[in-house]
Image (spheres, rainbow, N blue to C red):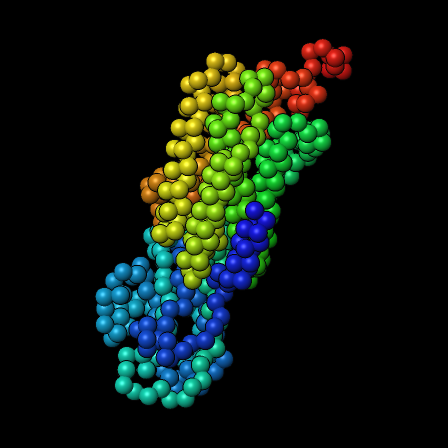
Length: 434
């Protein structure tokens, strides 16, 4: 498990790159020729005023090559089918780079619209002409939306607006919950008991989610000022969230498989606890490795695009990951149905039903939210999925915490005394303490 986590960290950190809206790089004539226009970036402008600022280090070289920026409005699929000259002529806005800095106001739209920015010059459509000189042109492109005062100073595109505030509120909620529940949780972990491992995994997963939210907030706070942010923090946020998810998956699969495989040999007096066996461990590890591989594949497939989270998955790896979650939910449903259908105790059945609610919410929230997002506008889909998944998984953790820390339910589902169960109330020896 530790080796897998180290591998995840190494891959994410080594492949991290900026996803900001201050874009720097080189205008390359050869790349523009090969791509029929060098792709620079894509930005979704709000309905209000937008601004594009382009700076080049050599206006002389830009004039010599007849350099220009081409802006296309919602032209992704159509551009691929056009010839080079037709593609350049289809630009909605053309910016001739004759000076070291150019400011271009984006036309107003009735709704948020994605704009694609390409670079072209005199050599782009002339395949047989030798490119004079080998120097490339350094550039900086800044993209702005209108802020709350109507001034074009906001680096966030339309699909990212509001995420910064969401992570701030999420961190505030984590802090308040930590202040309220840290003491009883610490006492429960110190007491140990049959559910000690479950509580440790839950606490670790929740702490990792908090770390992910903090890293995202730091990244977006810097991003709001310079349009670049801290890419390392963004990668760390994704890494902590991925580790949290694989930890939860390992715990849920281990519990369900352990309970199922051990029912035939487990004495009825033993409590509902983490029952490990070679078969249950193999299933849990296999599920974890599969999910981790799909998460890494999804991150790699999205590495060339601009993103702040992996929740709005549209790649093949993302679809396979959602299919895996649905499959695991069905597996857990069949396991829990077998347990509940043969369980005689009403209180134990209630325990398993509550556990099933937490499991299904954790696994099914992402696929369901992706399906629901089709009814929203394009600029709202990623925010709906990202915010919805984080909130649903947090609620799932709360449900599981309430289940495993419940005093009355722990007492009823087990014949053991409070000496071996955390946060329970003994009916005989310790009544006076309460």
